[in-house]
Amino acid sequence: MKNFYKILGLNRDAHVIEIRRAYRKQALALHPDVNKNSDAKTAFIEVNEAYSVLKHPISKISYDKLYDHKIAHESIKNETRYRNRESYRNENVNKKADKGDRNAERYAKQSDAQFERKTERSGFWDVLSGVFEFIGMILQFFV
Image 1 (cartoon, helix red, strand yellow):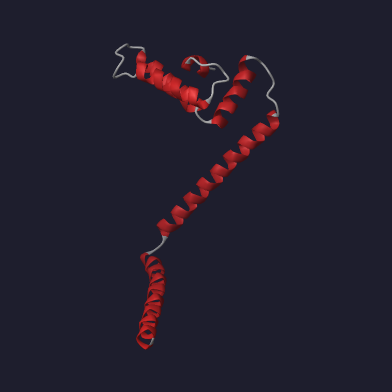
Image 2 (tube, rainbow, N blue to C red; image 1 turned 120 degrees about the horizontal axis):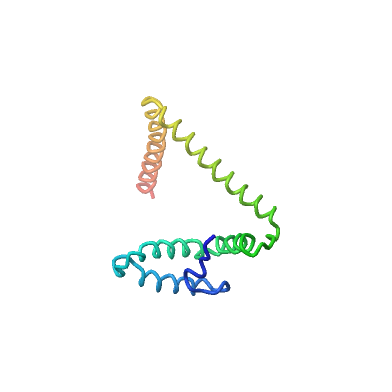
């Protein structure tokens, strides 16, 4: 497991602003357009990977817990609750994706006649709004 703090040259208690500053400094120094060294591209990719994990507080906390567990062999506090929460989030994401796929398939299977019926229904509201506009014009005439 990579030590993202070491890649960015930071301590573990670094704040989000410090992480951003370190990332920008490293990215400017290691960008392949600026640095022609052959290892600069891989180092730039590592810096981007480290920043993508550490820039969000929740992913930073998750990384810290997993790093402590893998490297320092410390037990993760509330590990079962943490794993249950992650599995619950993954299930919800998958359910929403499946629902979106089902809706897309349903709309793709619709015939042109069904589509025309839906547009006719929206035409009803256009007619109704026209009626209200006409009534408003008549009222203005008498007032």
